[in-house]
Length: 505
Image (cartoon, rainbow, N blue to C red):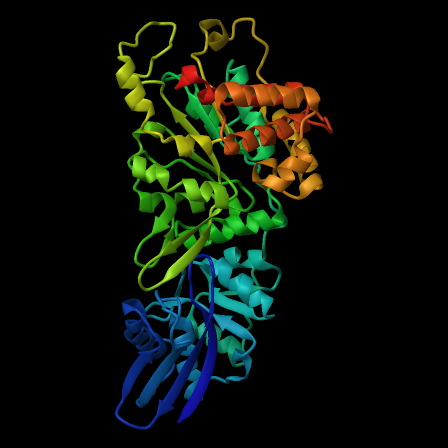
């Protein structure tokens, strides 16, 4: 008879709560039971672990084995506990020493041959283990990902026998090495130099990048809206180590196959307009992250915005303000980060050519109004900028005699400098300022205040729109290296909210 305890980690949202795998071997008829709120996949580990132990050169005990996954009220899912259960059985049976188990944590699914298969959520588990000065032993394919938690935080293994040998004093496991620093630059990143014309849209994109503001572009098909949106990540400031770690943890949990080569690259997500509300914000029986979480610290691009189901778009209202989303189910609840930068695009009417110089639009005014009303006023009010994007003139498109367009690297330098001014002032991008910080740091001069009061009276702006205009003006002032928000900055900020005008509605 014997008892052994092995440390492991569950997955709840982007968190990795600790699970103690307690194994007790007693006399009686041979049996293996798993308790502690396991789901079907965990219960099935009985057969995987039995075969893996036998095929790794060890003897499976012919006794009554009880495995307890503590705490008992935490749901456990997946095959991530296979390795810990197998090691616990071997330690309780005396086939491997138990002394080295307390300073390590174990994660991994076992094949019938004893090989280790990768699991989701390795990085959050490594971060939490490192906080307790424990090393995480996990499948080799997950090692580079988990190593982002720090030097010596993770050790990769390919087989149960390798782990057992290391615990028994044999050949040690090699520590995985993390990337040096967050990178993010890549030769395949779309460049703003590809965009011809569209000076106002380029300017709005630069302001959005500098302040973290959301943007809606309205224009006919082929005017370059999607092209502009795809180039926003290339002009965003480099991610800090903390931001890169948050984005990597989300990618690790999402289960799409995290590539450590993407460490430090801003996510860019562009879901199709047929996406459901669950796909957008997350959900499921065991809540998984949606597109807004996968875009954390990056860009969420919604093309053909009015074509999305209105109820789907309405779920964006709270995350846009809070930067987080809580998914509640009857059995469990998960909290996901969702600090994304929204960029959306839409046509001005059902056919797409309202206001175009070609005169191709034959939509009735009622049809145009119905089309635009698919986007609710409260959602529009939460978008910082909405600008028209006209078709590019033939001369600019062909580039005859035109000066080469500014490249992303030049714009990114200005954006990074403006973002640094904002961070030095209040520690966050201007788009995330609270009401008190807006009144303190974004207050315009006398001429700018008079201009803003006139705009509020004529456009009947809401309090939210008022604060968003001030945040925009503060970002414009930062780009101009101005310590004070002045009238020209306010005027440009008001001009960037095209849909606030009565004519636009």
